[in-house]
Length: 90
Image (tube, rainbow, N blue to C red; front, side, top):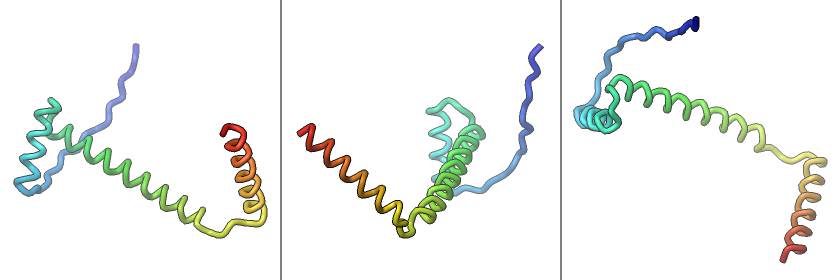
């Protein structure tokens, strides 16, 4: 027998301007989902984008520094190799 684990839901109230509320109503009807489900999708998407942006910012900070001597040497080797590949194909 499979055991189904469900996440508890929490009710909340939010205030929206009328135009946004009407757009949400229209979209939820088009998607054939409840407004609650639409807001859940939107918040999940926003959080995912926010988390991805934080990761990207951290990576950009890590890789924004100067290259080490070893990295510069490797970069030069990679450029030379790429030039050779292109020359052989053209």
